[in-house]
Image (cartoon, rainbow, N blue to C red; front, top):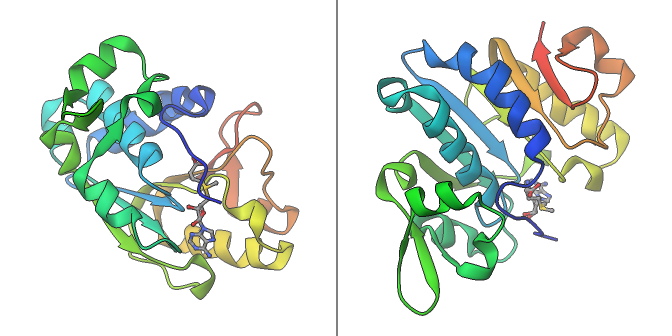
Length: 199
Ligand SMILES: C[S@@+](CC[C@H](N)C(=O)[O-])C[C@H]1O[C@@H](n2cnc3c(N)ncnc32)[C@H](O)[C@@H]1O
């Protein structure tokens, strides 16, 4: 089920700002993969957080690949349009909402163009185990792996490991612990979040 919302899991976002942004900011291309992105609130949250914390020039180098198996065949259209009803935007801190969203009629709001252009959606099945690219600074995969078997989780996380840049980061949800079989591949950045760094 594609349940999602903007600024979900602020705690992990704060750790991303602290650890991932400084790692990414100096690179000529900052690649982020949001795997299992649903209708886009999560990758757009990342885009806003990077915009706020990265500096204008580095932000121009940001490219977020948002992927989902997208059973509804709609997520790509929603993400490309970047238009959401106001009820779905109420968790966004007020100053960020006012800075990054413009009214679009009928109680809807549209994410501003400089943020929309940082995102590209593609349909992708994680269980095909074919990465969409490599050299990612951050791969975020939240509230997706819990639907997979333990063996599938291991294979998908191994794929993420191969797709990360040296020293790149992998983030999952609070309840999704790293399988012990993969502990040698990653270092947990902080004990209170599922944020890992590629060894
Ligand atoms: C609960 S939503 C999570 C959305 C977002 N990551 C979040 O945490 O707010 C789970 C998403 O995983 C996607 N999904 C399920 N199986 C998948 C697969 N094999 N490959 C890619 N995406 C998948 C679903 O389509 C759905 O959009």
